[in-house]
Amino acid sequence: MSEKMSEKENVPISESAADSERGVSSVLPKQNAFQRLIHRRNDLNELGKGMLEQSLQYDRAQLEVDAVKVRWKLDLMVLPMMMCTYMLSFLDKQTLNYSNAYGLQADTNMSGDNYSWVASALYFGWLCGAWPWNLLLQRIAVGKLVGGMLFVWGIVCMLQATVFNFSGFFAIRFFLGMLEGCISPAWVILTSMLWTRREQTMRSSVWLCTNGVSNIIGALLAYASGVADGLSIAQWKLIFLIVGALTFVWGFVIVLYLPDGPHNAKMLNEYERVVAVWRISNNQIGLKDSTIRTYQIKEALLDGKCYLLWMNAIAIGILNGAVTNFMSAIIKGFNFDALRASLMQAPGGAFEVVGCLILGWVSQRPNMIGAAIVLGCLPGIAGLVGILTINIENRYALVAMCWLQNVLGSPIVLSWTIPGVNVAGHTKRSTVMGIYFVCYVVGNIIGPHLFLSWEVPRYPTAIKGLLGTYCAVALIQGLYTLWCWHDNKKRDKMGMHAEASEEELLEGFDDLTDKQNKHFRYKL
Image 1 (cartoon, helix red, strand yellow):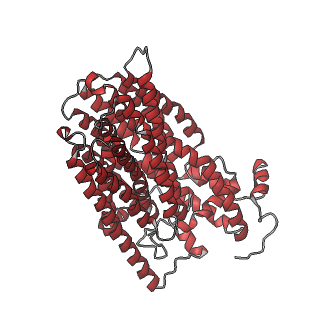
Image 2 (cartoon, rainbow, N blue to C red):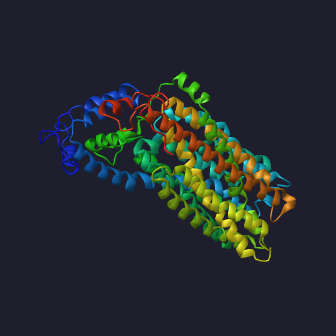
């Protein structure tokens, strides 16, 4: 490719923005053909390949300069939308935990392990929706699908304020989980389409760290609901109504502004969209291909590394199900009243935010994703040991041990990111992610049932089980990282270089799997 270009070809962002307002016909003569291709077929890989071919007409140095500006636009406009959406989805899930402190079980006549089953109901719904959502996400625009779901799950969240018995609550939570099951795989897919493989773990950590923000907001909301006087409804119902209404309203923002990928990001002009595709071409996974390829499903089921991912999904699911649904009950068991128990959960959110950001940064260092996951398990292990051994009279020290459990958010999201960065081939990746989230949900169902009602407040059976689960996560992740390192070394010895030429970059849009594409390297 000649490095010499006419002035018209070498277009920086500042000039292309002005050209975009005039129709960009002089800068991007092929763009209208690309737009017609969108309407003609639902194959973003073909579109992406055409946009990449166009980007190769420009000077590489200019593309690299403009790529930084495009990344900043995505970070400042798309990432906050993802953060707010994820925060609301987690807040919806956590409403049960916060409402439990205000007489929810008594008002709905729950007894025995009814509450544990209601906590699990959301994950039964997610279990039913996990596989179908991953198939739909391969074929349907991500932004439009998530936006539509926000309207529906906002309404369902508010409906929780209308139920009056165990069976009603179980049904509502089941449908809420089935609807919200789309958000995590959708964000993994969208992150892989907008950011480079090196950038993805940090961006994923940023949008998941809003779980911690959600913990803080939820705890303060629960506290405010608890001190509100003269209400015509029970305090626990108010929490569901407020969070559901916020979710519904936010749906309008997502439908109007969230992109489905770099090809239709409204915050980018047409030249910047081409740059955005060029930016992620080294990912070697393309954009998205709607064709279901059965050989890729078979490859996923025969790939040993995938089974390690699925085993880890069950383990982190068990940890998440336990921490998410029983933190309020554990803290309350240390002789705190309902109001103080709600407020005491807020600092845990700060631990999650800080943990996600620090370990997300660590994961961006070369060959550090696996190490960051293992490091993220250590605070949780220390906290569980503290809950088992610290004297019950030191209740604030015990609460601090509970806060350490919130650091779990970092290994969770980094584990979610791995199928996005280490599995190529769109049918294979959808298969791996579908099974992955099924396994994760199974773990979330198991987690709450480790807590036996007669073991309040330390729940020794649950705490010992969770300690073993943390150790399993670290061991499985170590084995997975070692396997990926071995496969990378084999490809290096074969002389298959990792730095792709222009022709090999285009191959990344041919929907090759990570096993087929020998230039693909696993992130460690």
